[in-house]
Each structure stands twice: as C-alpha cells, then as structure tokens.
Image 1 (cartoon, rainbow, N blue to C red):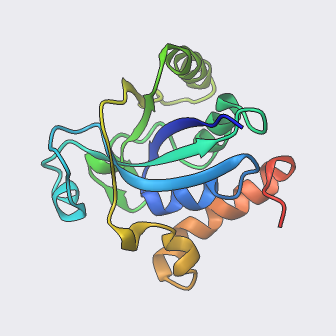
Image 2 (cartoon, rainbow, N blue to C red):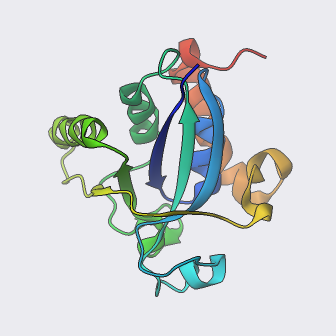
Length: 177
C-alpha cells in the first residue's frame, strides 16, 4: 500500500489531530508546525506569534481508502475557514486556517475546494493555500493529546465536539474498532 501525505491547519492541532484520527484510511496523524520562517520551532516560539508557523497536522493516509477531497471535507467541516488568525478561543496567526500542498494535484484540488466553499459562506473563506516547505513535528507531549487527555477541560470543550461531529457526519468513513 502506497500512502500519501496531507498537511492541514485549522486551529489547535490537538483538535484537528483528534478528528482526523477517526477516519478509515488514515494511517497516522502527527501534530506539528509549518508555514513559518524559523528552523526547528518550539511550541513556545510558535505561540509567541514570531515564527510565522501555524499549528498543523501531517496526515499519512491510504488514498485507496480515503481521498484527499474526503480529507478536505472533514477538515473544512471541523473548523471555521472564515475566521482570520483564530479558531474559537484560540487567537493568533498560529491558529490560522491553512492547506499546505505537497504537489500540483493537491494544490489544484484544494484551490477548487476553497473556491467552491467560498460560495457557501456569507463571509469570505480566508484559508491560506501554500506549498509545504518544511514540517516540524511538535513536542512529544502534543502527540495524541486528546487520546491521552480526554478529561482535559480544553479537550472536552473543543476537541470532543469535533470528534463527535466527525463520528456523526462521516459515519461511513470511520476507523473500524
């Protein structure tokens, strides 16, 4: 099985990671940083807003089981692409909506998706579309955060509703237990 990679940022990476891990065909999800100017950024540096990075997830997936467009469906259903530099209570450029494409095919698919999506909203879609230049995995304590901390107040208030939305809306695309 040949896997592919998608890199997406839609607010806090804990929430996006938790939602994407629910999907059949997703082999792994790694929380990290991308879209900035600093080599090997830390969480503290990214949170300062000075590195230019966004909190993102890198998704390794089996395109025979789930398509890039289906990943985009889930991604855009689990965050508000009209909010500039924020998602819910998280404010700052590190929480921006961003699709970082790995090749021309992903670029074209994401651009078409964003263009179509823009017509569905009253406000403009502000999701950035850029080529992935570098991805930096976040610190270990950020990996699988929701899974390791299901009773964390932030997770209960923000990640859990996204996971529930995926379980309800994308029932036919869920991992089999």
